[in-house]
Structure formats: structure tokens, C-alpha cells
Image (cartoon, one colour):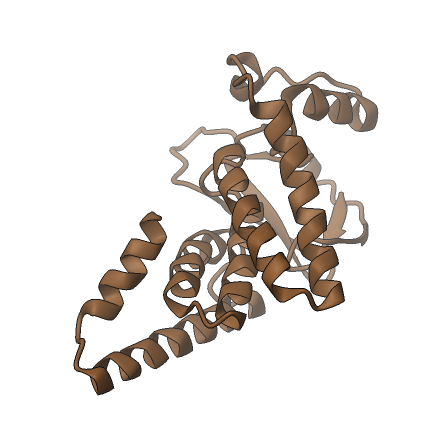
Length: 219
């Protein structure tokens, strides 16, 4: 398996015979994370007794053809899971390619300190990621986490709070409550909410902060 850091960036490879017993699915029932070199598998949803534990061997935001090609090349099988067996949206291949471009553009803009460009690209990328990933996908949580950081950097705290809430709902399941990434996200979210509440209290706006965050989440 490919070892990754908390933001799912590859850092190496390892042999995990027990994890290898889990089959691939493009809408997996579980996700793997790493605590050092220790692999941890967590269910992404309630699993009735007898339900198969499945993992994503490849990036499931790719088009069906790209996923199947990657699996055939690396694991010598063609995926026939429920997602691959269902009709694929006509726009999916183009959207998958666009997400890859947007993500690369975000990272390049961050490297250059072009924060507004990074935020704009991240917002567009998250719209694509929301359509392409299963709702509980850790990768979607990472996209939302990054977007929230860029929105906070741009002083768009209601939007940052909305993004971080969505990210936290995903990552606390996939990574666990005790993961450093999740703990830091919770601290950032708490700090942003406290700052907004303090500003609202000073201005006498009360519950408008909560409504603003909800509106940002729905936008």
C-alpha cells in the first residue's frame, strides 16, 4: 500500500497483509490512514454484520476509464463495483480532469504566495470534488480543509467556518478524533467561531453569525 501523510500525500510504500484482504470499491465502506507506519482502517459508515470492508485503491474522483486503467495496471483487475457498473455522467471525465488541474493550480498558487488565486481555484475545485467524491471521502475533507484555510486567510470567516465544519464532519470519521490534523482543525474552527461571535456581540448582531455560516455552507 502507498503510505500517506494526514493530508493524503504519498510518502512511501509498505506491506500490510491484513489490509490487503480488503477489496477495492469506488465507494468504499472504509478508509485507511497512517499513524507513523501503523495503518489504521476506519469504517466510513455503519456496517451491518457481514458487510464487506472495502477500500479505495485509487483516487475515486478519476473517471471510470481512468480508475479502471489504474487498477488494471497496478493490481491486474478491472473494477466491476456498483459505481463502475452504473452509468457514468457524461460530464464526469471532463470534471475529473478539471479537478486535477484546479488542485495543481491551488498548490502552485500557494507556493507563489498568490493567495487570492489559490482561494478562487480551491473554491472551484471543491465544487468539483463535492460532485466527484462520495460524501464521506477523506479526500473531499482535505479539499474542504484547504479551502477553509484560504478563506480564513482572506478574512472570509463565515465561509471558512462553513468549509471547516464540512471538513470536520468527514475527517473526524476517516482520521479519528485524536488525529493531530483533526485536533488542529477543531481548534481553528473554534477560534474562527469565537472571533465571529465576539465581533457579532460587539456589534449587537447576536444570531446573525450562525445564520451567516449556514448561508455560506449552503452557497
